[in-house]
Length: 448
Image 1 (cartoon, rainbow, N blue to C red):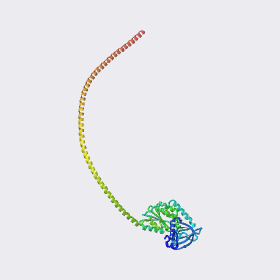
Image 2: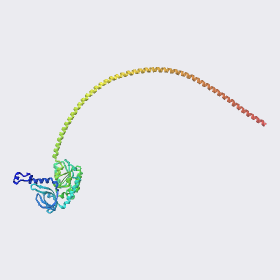
Image 3: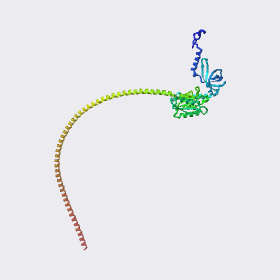
Image 4: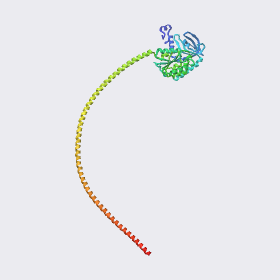
């Protein structure tokens, strides 16, 4: 009951209004603590005291280093077995824990998951700094993570070849998906060579085109055993992996950075095999459902298609009927038009033939008149030509006679002129001869 009843009020007198019972008070404290879980840190510093070991776990107290306050602590046996250091009274240490409240007893204590001496806190600080850096870079964001294939044909497995993790993972995959092959790439999963070995295995499987999912796993161990899975090179290798990666490191309470950057996290190697595959029964059920859906969809589609075909056929038949009627109408119109064209053609031809005959008659008449006119003209031209020939002959004869007379006269004149020149030449020669004789005679007289 949340409030005291009337009998309690009668026996104890009048109580303040709204008073709570111890049960409600303790449960309210539990509820408030649970709702405010994020307000409490996961790491608390103090001094170990009053250590009591039991088969189920270990009780101890964690005292403040400078003041008097203490808080009770409980570490279950499986957690204590994973501690790197034994719980020893007087040790100044860091515990990783969550707040736990028992309402039945009103007790508040810490449930401890890990523990290490205070001198090793520097390693945890470095881990936290790396975690913060990787988170700021977005390597832990859900948006960048890939989905795990539901039906992989091949799964790559990175783990110790001799560990139970390999057998558990392999068995889970074989039981759930017998057709899925497992390609094991053995690696060292703890120690100095672990980081390099695991990176080599992951990169080798990532470059294998047959591998659709990579599982990185190992069984439980101490923080020191699992510390290699917090190494920055390994975390960045997983972040850069093109193949989806499932990580299962240690037990449920173990946390490593590779789990934050992986595409999927599993608590155990067996769960990793479960996460990476789908049971064959589920596949068969989904296949049967898919086949039924396909049959139903096909039947529905076929019926709809047949109905569409029927409608299209009916529409086509109606269209053909209309086309047939239109064709008959066009043919009738063509026949009427052909008849009209024939009538119009005959009328036009007859009209044009009559016009041509009339024009031919007119042209013949005109041509006859032209021919008669040309004949008269030809006769007149022949007469004019005959007159012209006679005139030309007369003129030619007169002209020739005149030229002949002129030529005879010129010849006569020339002959006369030649005779005159000949007589002059003869007379001149005789005069010269006479002079020569006279000169000879005078010479002879002088000589004598």
